[in-house]
Image (cartoon, rainbow, N blue to C red):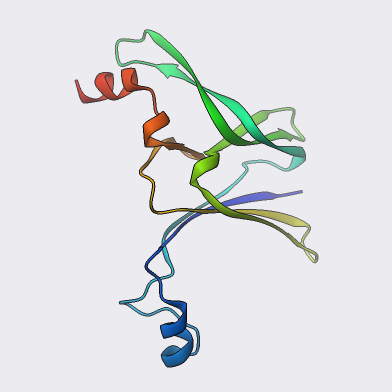
Amino acid sequence: MNLILHFILVNSEFNKGLADDLYEGQETEDNIKHLWEDEMKVSEPVKEFKIKNNAIYTLAGYYPDNSNFSFEIWDMTLVDCLTEGGQEMKFAVSKKLIKKTEKVVDEPTGDTHLYFYLHDKFPLENPMDGVYILKSDFPKELKIKKES
């Protein structure tokens, strides 16, 4: 199966009543429903995936000087994927950022779409594709290293 993830930042100032009354429910240039959307398709067919709530995500990588880092981020929603080729992939969103989620299966193609609608009232960090962390939960050590 193909797995496509959609991360959508919802505009809290969108006025649905105005859209319904004047524009047949459609957004306008001055009344935008979504501020941005990131869409990503898992690079190969997915054998299985699991969604875990209230999980811990390990943000790991390397500083510019090639020393490694690893930080645990709590209260995350994770999507763990196992591809048909045996590759494991993780996508992660801070639970507090999530306004709503939705799973849609396209019957003719069998594609599965996971939608994560995100609040715009909380600042976030996006350190890599498919990872959205509440700014207040983002490791301070990475912010310092990032700025220097």
